[in-house]
Length: 445
Ligand SMILES: Cc1cc2nc3c(=O)[nH]c(=O)nc-3n(C[C@H](O)[C@H](O)[C@H](O)COP(=O)(O)OP(=O)(O)OC[C@H]3O[C@@H](n4cnc5c(N)ncnc54)[C@H](O)[C@@H]3O)c2cc1C
Image (spheres, rainbow, N blue to C red):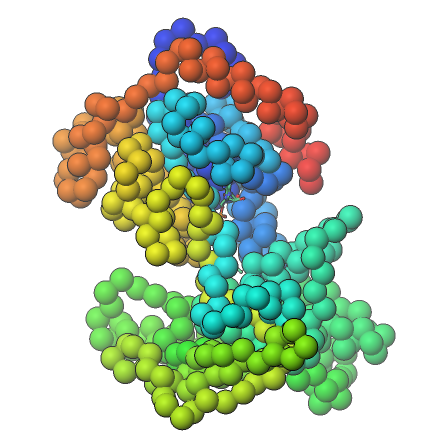
């Protein structure tokens, strides 16, 4: 019997878990809940559940993307999982209704980081769309403009684009800009290149294969401005590295960045911090930077070193943060957790964050591992469906034990609530024309 039917036909209370977001972390959490005998209901804002795999990871990562799509599909196509697409929590379904009224046994936030961190320059945001673009929009466009019938925002990247950033995603952004610029310049000479192939080969080898030099094309290319140095870039990391390990990490970071510079003709300006906007006629026309130094790991601005960079497009790529949802407490730019180990959300018993929304690490492996760990160790214990005796969980972490002790409070959904929920979900499915996961995905591919 499928899970929705099980809700309809319920004769005894059962743990039912709401999962917000159906991508890497959410789909993994759903599978882990089902394996523990809880019924997972996945609410996904998008038509498709692939999250940053589809909209963040640039489209040249074809193999990785296909592999991750398959894993997500495998988890969500299970008859033990209820999938509700096109349902944004905080908009199509309010947090209050989800948390307080529907009677879920637990709520898992697996909604990733869907908001760009604002560029820390006063007034810059007023130029969004007028000379300023944020990373997520740009990558979305890059990944989807090739789709048939694409009708989202369209960007024309100019040859004086600058990117403010420094993490892995900002490297993808400068690569996107330069691949676009060189492909366009080649197209103007009657040479058509495939961007995915050019990404693999690199720009110099692509030009060489067509018997053309960079000088002949005359492309200036994008410049990445970073407030620290190459060796500080979060491109390779380790927890509490020894001095030797740190030296190795720093060397690895320099090597990665040098390769990006040579393989994609990216220009790089370290130790520069954006401090002001340059504007003209209501548009952002550049950024005023200030030089910095890194002392004991801290960035220090250097007085009297300001300089202006004029550019028709500034791309801000300084990280993504969770989108606020009315009803979920925040602390700074993140949700307010009582513990990073358990993902417990402050003041909301039975609500747990997992995956990117909790770890803040833009990394598929970490998102998946964290989702499994939190479900297996914490949510299962909370619901009273864990494999391990509650006392054993205390050995891994005191905080896990504390949550596990609350397991007795894990509230199974009542039969009445399950039937009412099944009716709500059935109505939503009908509204959307949703019958089952495989047909839905086939219809939306
Ligand atoms: C440019 C870029 C490049 C990257 N490159 C790499 C890489 O090379 N290697 C790597 O390992 N990682 C990479 N990552 C990071 C990786 O893609 C993510 O860390 C990982 O996919 C996060 O998975 P997640 O399930 O935690 O979150 P997400 O993929 O963000 O999933 C969250 C899901 O929740 C849904 N959602 C959000 N809000 C709501 C709501 N209110 N209601 C309902 N649903 C909601 C979203 O639609 C989405 O499906 C990259 C990320 C970016 C942006």
